[in-house]
Amino acid sequence: MKAIVLASAEEPIVNLEIEKPVIGEDEVLVQIKAAALNRRDYWITIGKYGGIKYPSVLGSDGAGVIVETGDAVDNNWLSKAVIINPSNNWGPDENHQGRNFTILGLPENGTLAEYVKVKAKYIYPKPAHLSWEQAAALPLAGLTTFRALFTKGKAKKGDKVLVTGVGGGTGVFTLQWAVAAGCEVFVTSGAEDKLEHARRLGAAGGANYHLGDWAEQLKQVTGGFDVIIDSALGDDFDKLLDLSNPGGRIVFFGGTAGNIPALNGRKIFWKQLQILGTTMGSAADFKAMIDFTNQHKIIPVIDEVFSFATAADAFKKLANSSQFGKIVLKP
Picture 1 (cartoon, helix red, strand yellow):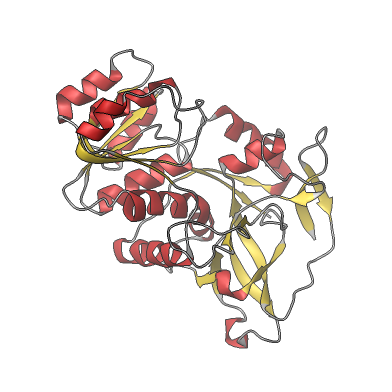
Picture 2 (spheres, rainbow, N blue to C red; picture 1 turned 60 degrees about the vertical axis):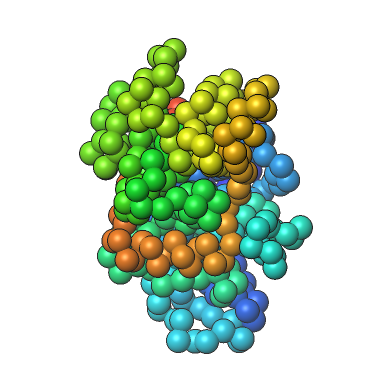
């Protein structure tokens, strides 16, 4: 089968013919119709991710058709259209992942291949209103942001929500979830066209974080936020304390801009703020996300679709952070 393989540190993206996976009794074989990239894939290709091994098939997001089932799996799944939950071995505690937690696409071979094997418990029916490309865009970024916004951030109708760094898959999903839930959503970006695109998706407003007074602008317009979802950290993180309403929740799941700077703890305790970290999500989070997607007919935003043959171009675009929405690949 064709696959996009992480071959070595010197040759990170190679299109190869490899053996089709052999499934176990509790697994299914999915013929991939579409897969999607995440920032995680980029960090792996440049060697800035833990547990990298060569060779590996990357990719955490995928949608396709089940073509083979293990002996312990209901064969009614055969020929079903499915999406895959990439959050594996979460563990027994909904509050955090366990020691055996893994993400599909490293260490296990992932979705950037014609076929992928996964345990049957990680497959879900594809939402009928989504195309293959749209369904493939949903799992990792959708799950991460759904948990951040609702499980951790407790966002509800009428809340004021700030999404920092809209443009990538996680920022756009957070915006879509919050708008569908009836929140008043504002965003930040370093690109004016991305701010405008966010407004078309329902954002009430936004600010360009390249401007020194972006936080003051948002404070003046909104008065403050009940929930802030951040994936950057960095030197501007302290501004989120001033932007938070009393009792506000700041949830983060990335650190692309660096670490958290020194914070004024008095602001945190006096305003009764919560600063919450999150990673991926549990099986319950994933099911809730699928149900929400079906209920509100959420359609993931696709920036561009590439073929496996042009995967290097897709990774280059991901590295440049020039996309708005998800980058999808098709075998």
